[in-house]
Image (cartoon, rainbow, N blue to C red):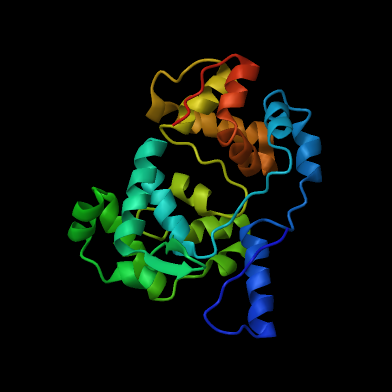
Length: 249
């Protein structure tokens, strides 16, 4: 993989080594997928996803706050609505950098969001109740909450216990952020995996979230997160291959 880097100053070897390590983690460069693929090819659902997306690595946010915004915006919302909220936050509070006649908007830092009035954030970005959680989480992170790197070094259960201390981060959100095994089921994904596992839509989404979550973990165990990741990226193909109509957003 070749990555070009632009800098406003000359980078030292130390800076270069740090950047390479950061990119390696965030792009999943060092992930060994052989065991997952061997497992997936024996599964009636996953075999189609890995054939379609062979070689896809799981990505990881560099900053914990980026994942917190993602997980809170995904709660109880369709993908299109979640993307609209995140785009609004980035446009209003992100930092714009320019290089080589290009312009890129970076996601806002926890420091900047921590200084906002939640009511203002909610109104400007149409976040509703989510704004108070995002600002509250930003304040905790600025005050010294563990970094993403520190979370990654914790045992899976310890990492999850720590993450749910953040405002607005429950079981579902922690499974999205947690770089370890997780299976994040909510009102959107319960339809997708309910159809895949049981060939029928849940009668009551909220009631059946835990049922679908347990089945996913029972079926895929330590590969639950990678299975979720592959399925979520391959809904159109899986709909055709398995003859089910999966929600695409």
